[in-house]
Image (cartoon, rainbow, N blue to C red; front, side):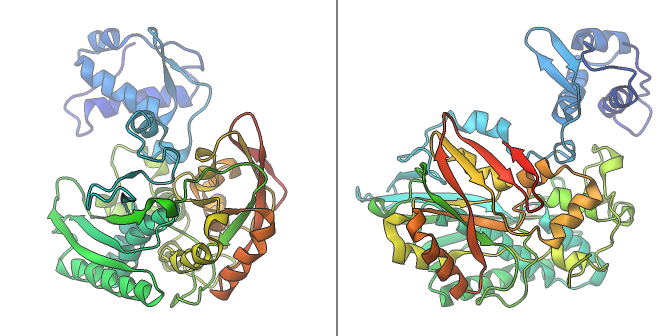
Length: 466
């Protein structure tokens, strides 16, 4: 296979290989089922190193345009993977789970978070939970807003995002005691000066104080700020949370048949929130950023994206941050940067009042509405009464032409926390939520099945199976 490679160009040779092969596939020159020559043969015919060819083919495999066949090299696939994957992101992280699922699963395999023995204090009746997550690429959107307006306070919401992505996962194993949280900020100091760090620290302290006012015992354990300009052109905001808990209070997420699924809305303004919420969390922001925002940001801020990504899917949307979001009171920037809601005050109350009647809690983060499939055994999850789709997700779908099947895998689509209880306790959960001015409803139920799977009916009547 002869390619037109030019080492003198600024584009790396491996990227030239990617671009030329992907073009040949998109134009139909290489049809589905076509078997590519071996890595060694491509390398020899084009006078390049074999590892350069291998690197290019791995990128094309991740994009979904070619696939590896056992002992027979690569062949062209029938269709491309999602735009989400083409941008270097995985909605289900299957390749990660293939590795970590082989590791020690802790003392309660199948729980939402890994639970270990109490190594910190040595109490055999207690356990430790440690969890790490962050704001993801939402911090890049905050960076764009900061650069456009000069106002660093936008990063206060990013601090909240990072905390909530840890805290609300911890809720799903029943955490109800003290939580210690540490932040890690990786930045390019040339682009993110001290005022950005100050806003993140201030945002952390403000949000933790607000949570404590609501009875959530969460405290700052300090953190780390690293200047890593070689690793990031902007800023990355992550957190790590740790807690000690009594084993007899854990939620194992042993979800079974004949349960009601209560969805807690991700939009509106909870009684403990200062502003209205668009429903966005901190998942799917790579898609939201590129599919909603226009080429202006690629041209002005090239440090905010990977130059290896196909340029056709980089900042390819119709909007600028200040534009009005259709069918909404938000601007596009306000909607995408809406701080991630924590359900901690509500869930703590529900745990206190319902106790062991809560059979499962699922934070619909990575994997969106399909997250539930990872929990329980032999369960058919039926979601047939979802909330109306929030305007932001409608706008993302319209701008990107992403299939609704994929939208439900990437975004929460209207509710970001699910509570699994016996049918006769469903109304109690709904009533507790409404006391916090959070809409709640039974969005589905569970029934017995041979293996875990999900049937989902969208608000417009579309049916999807996962």
